Image (cartoon, rainbow, N blue to C red; front, side, top):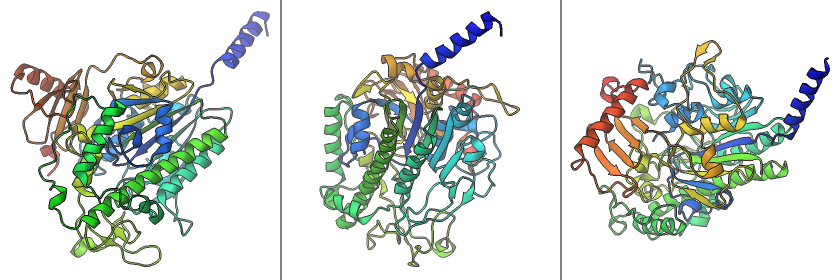
Length: 534
């Protein structure tokens, strides 16, 4: 080797040794968690581990998801709007590019990109971006992950989850005490132990909690058995007051009124059943936080916490879906719901006040009444693209990279920004081609400037479409509508709870924002809801 080449190589090696170690990245996502459920966002549920991450990190006041589980997962994993990744709705193929119900090959996933930069990769939890009956072509190991423990399907029993899988092999729960949330924390901690080394790692933990069915261990439910006796209206007022005190919502954002379809607490029968439903929900969130504690504990044990970039967020707002008792052929087993428990008891399906939820032999939801409280202070729920459906808590923790401590940022962000941030901090390159396929350009923008300096150039606009519900946010202005109804216009800075519709006063602005939404929809493979939902 010539002296000049030797010196150049020596200098390059020295520079690599002197460069800060690239961070590990851990993305944790809850399923059907409302904006106000965790403590650091105003909730009363015990979430000390998430609260500790917030106290030493940064919370986003205005971070957005896509209003539904599988579109959010597609968007999170690819940095694209869900229709661009092929999952504009659920896991059904409607014969349109944006609605294939299966992650396409013109997108790349975070682990696929990070592996090109030398990252190790693992996943625990709910995948839900490919039909469970379509083969393994889009399972986690086929889309960039080295290790996987979790479920391919979207929902199911926490005591006997459908499609439970390790790597590419379907498995069954191994212990009598199996509880899915606990198992995710345990396996994530194991992966941290296995992957910690010279190379950084990316870990994705997709919890199914607190998605229905309302299942939790009885000892955790008992912590909340009397907590909700004052009802949902009192809970919303309590949470809103706490949110304002924390600074996570502005005092000028009034609490939205009770949904007119929800009765007052005084007017309902079966109060004990309603109290129990919310107690089980709280226990599910509590247990999720305990799993987060296992994950952060594993990072501490390996001396990795300070240089691990951690994101915690939710896939959509609280879920108002009811659950009727199945009849006729529907009473038979589904791919996600067992007929009997592992010890042979029949599973009682449906929101029946005569059946107290929580155990493995029950299958219920917590309904719109408590979902409204989960989404405090906003309107509407999962499915809709008003703020209650799309607003997510986002906690970011990275002691070596986040300048703020116990900080709150008002800058808007979206799921598409997570991929961009991962690529940025990893020193990776988002590809224009991958495995012979031309790749859709990245839509997201890195959040790193916000983490480091408190601000970044924002998106010109952020867009939504789900089940014909549509929205665009450009700066402080948000244009939004339910499927088949008129556009509503809100000044989000002044009125984030969407109570003062300005569409009648600002017809020009409505027309401009609608035109911009239509341009995006054509570019992003969005098709009119009624054209394919038949």
